Image (cartoon, rainbow, N blue to C red; front, side, top):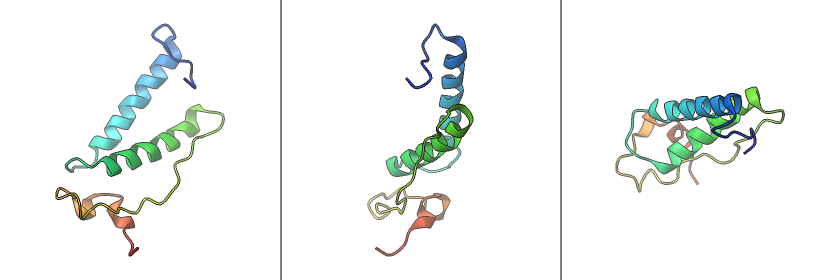
Length: 90
């Protein structure tokens, strides 16, 4: 919406497709089983980073990224997760 991309707008469409590829790549770059929290934070942080290149006002992705569900996810990769390192006692 921000870029006014559609199947009929070649340049904005190319930008959106490129961004989509980069976001998928950022998720797949972490070798681990499923984790919604990890994937959401990974994408939000990457979108904020990429927005600096293409938007006049960059997006932000700030907040408390401490993992609070590692004990609920038996597939949690522990130290392999970039957000697990932010774990602090609550």
